[in-house]
Length: 219
Image 1 (tube, rainbow, N blue to C red):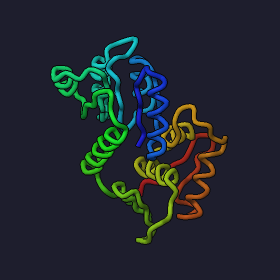
Image 2: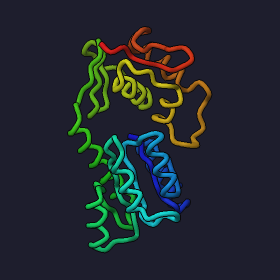
Image 3: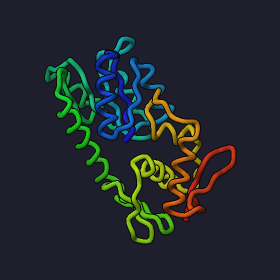
């Protein structure tokens, strides 16, 4: 799951990013409302953790903008505003959950997992193209009915491609789905993951569109 973290407290943002990374989340961090809106429009995340006390605009106004997105966004509001009125206001504007500061990391992670499960239940649990089937709830893949052993990023890459059959996804687009902003990665990271997937599945399941990106044929 790709998370957009909107938090102007750099120390807290660094701590959250590291904790979320350890739990398997890909986290992109911005420190202002306008940056959050731009980031969501440029590369739509799966979930937004949104602080309301931002330096350039009210977080509730950011929430309003996010809910206008063509792709529905899960939003967990994270804020020092903890009155009932603040909570109701956030939920009424489209937030999916609300967590007041200070908070325990275990509670934040539990709430994120709950939102993740809810999303999975609202979506198809399986994607099948040709001989390959993805179980998006249990994060497993199978080839001709036999489970394939995939690393986390290999699964995420395969999922991104299989959710967009027939569409060519650029290398940059795939990198943004797998890695957090600012995370150090080698120049051929995507190519390495594609190579491993082809060895585990087949050489022609994922097609290279030279100079553009990768695609899976819509069958």
